[in-house]
Length: 219
Image (cartoon, rainbow, N blue to C red; front, side, top):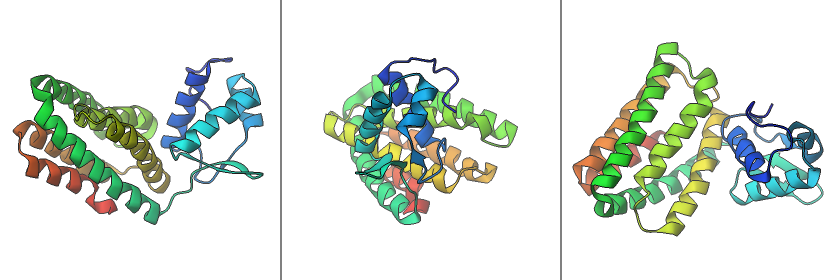
């Protein structure tokens, strides 16, 4: 089902945002066929509108499209996850180091605020003992933290590419590990803190290492 906040006859940007989130948070099974004729009834729009949105999502790697076979949610695999994770590390390291050099106090404040929001959600997940319905909220907060980390790098193409790679990575992770166990999340909490500490230290090598360590289990 689409996000409950999506009303009938929504605009194309809202449909794009909702389908993007569903693809990143296990809203569709990996490899599931995406039928514009079915989705149009969920969103109260034309099949052509849904088709256009799915084509856009295929350009950022979340949807697979084949002529005469239609659209599918991207399939997941350990190999694909590793490949995307390696590229993510490279982009994030370069973007974070450049942002640390350029961003100054304003960047540090925004990064600290993004981490505070993420930590609040992670503590609530820990209290409940499972991710459950908090997965979309956590996914948004985690993405905001990492995007803030590279936001002052001064390289728009890197930021644009990273956004696509991050979405593909999140889809691969959720597709392989739909239920995040508490001990799995506990490691992630510590890794996010290590990235923040390294970024605020102003030292390049610890920051690169913290970013690598955050992904090393996937490499």
